[in-house]
Length: 258
Image (cartoon, rainbow, N blue to C red; front, side, top):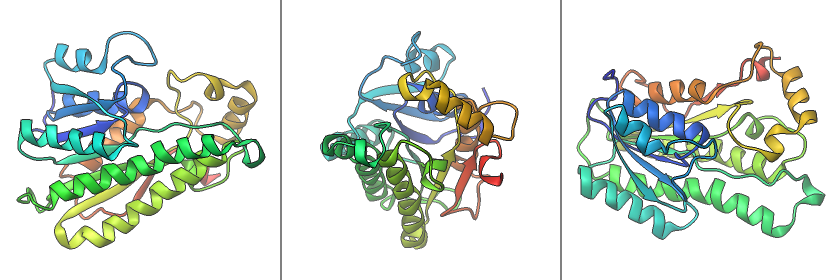
């Protein structure tokens, strides 16, 4: 195990599967104590849980069942973290869902669910984390770090998923606002916006027409992997990411450069 995040206490939402799973595992391998927050422990990919993977490798973690769209759940999540560890150093707002629908195909219930998880979830996570971080003594000039998961779809249009794109544009905006508003309190807030990342998700993520479109748009000769995003998250969570706040780090294999 490395020690880039040694002694840090980190919460990762949506950490049972996909990108969140990779982030949580990478944080633990770098020495952080990780709180795995999700609605279920079972990974979409199948196999061992994130908690099992981390503890088997000698890392420190615990699981907290959390619906990020419910303030009560997020409040309990941060409360449990602080009760166990005494503080919160890193909050990763990763949990997300999608409808895979364009404007006219999107039902009000679909819109509300995507916004509840993707946008209200980030609001809840950021607000509750800042409430805690603002009370803490600084470490290496920082009281706490927030990392929000955006998407390239929050920057440019992408066919067929209006609610998701709108929610991710909101994730990028809230990151900038928090970074500016709470810099004087020594709280850092950054965003990561992935391009096409291959995870265990099915349905829309594996649609042949969509995959072909994504291949054509990605200059790098492969799609992204969850570990590509996790590597960026480790950097932004670490003290090496100094004087960086309000940034949106794009991990897209060159998509937006084309």
